[in-house]
Image (cartoon, rainbow over all chains, first blue to last red; front, side):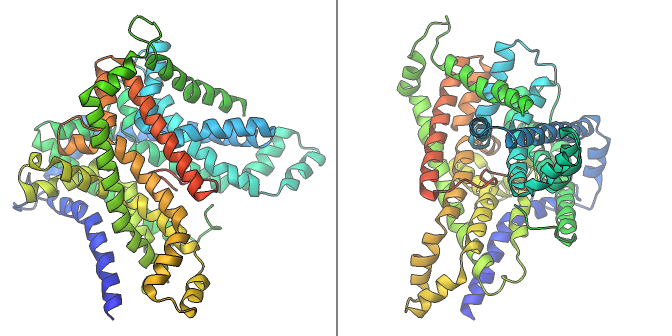
Length: 263
Length: 257
């Protein structure tokens, strides 16, 4: 009895710690208050500000668009890289594996800083372009795509590919029609990982982004230093919307019939 | 294969060489060690190194103390076994971390009034809040893999509950603990956004890079990157020795699909 109570209490306490701030902010986002403490009247003001301020809208759509571009490019590159490495010699495989591991364990600050120095100080690329930002986030995301696709390649039935070749497919047909369909779930989950990495990234973006462009992360960090309470409380609305979206998507994902166990 | 190899060489390997070359040269392009001497003799940089290490150690310890019981209860406790509640604990990972930290900051402001009085406490508190999910997930994975019959065998052989946990569960979950620690320790050592948000100061390793960066002092910025890289290599090496198997794909921070 006591034991059960303790277990409930511990779980409840940690859940409270994890969720209370977001939920409290969610409640306050529907009021006119600018600080936590006193609730002053129901209002949709924050949501209206959020959806009518061009600066905020640009920042949100910019972040989402960037995430999709980076994720699509990383998924193509990482999948192609994994397939190519899988069918190549052992030595090359080890070399690629090692290099692939570097951005995974490295601190994002170091990754962002080093890429920025390389592109701006070494290759003299203008910081006004989106090239450094996209490349920087791809360096972060692609290794994770590779890491998800590779095990799936190793698990799949090797004979099918050879059978396709024997039956008259050329290599690219065999890849597109036999290999790719088998690894598809891993490619998709690599894509999802890339999206979330890009959405959550602050460090690489802050070193490589053009000065006039902001992602949600860099915008929030700058906004909290300023004293514009209108923007600050509009961001409460944004975090509430993101929270609700994440909850809905998690529930949807849990409802879907599970295809095979995750890798 | 070839495009990816080229990509890796260009944007992963080459940047490291650029950092190394900047770290070992001075402003005139001559080879020198003065950047390193500067780093290790400068009170501020050494202080920052110690301060961020202290923050990272405390954050990791608190995450482990809070997270281990959660993972254990979810994986092995009688109540939640059937319907895993793990998703509730990893869900916050998907919410942008700057927004979550801002939320916690508002709460702390409500309780403390002025955040500037307890910068150290606030930073550790917010970091634990930020990184806890990344500790719980690998611990849970390790604990669910642990075979129940091991625990039952220990009990049958006369161990009491505490002994079962200390002598069977804990040692067998070491891979999960190591992976959780690497997922929390490194990011908390370099994540200067948290400190930046709760208290404007530059006491975290990452923010030193940032300050040198904005001053266009790429030589000293590179030295700090190299020092961080060395710390990362050491931790990776130690954790590989401890677990003795390939790191799982999810062995980093915020991230599994």
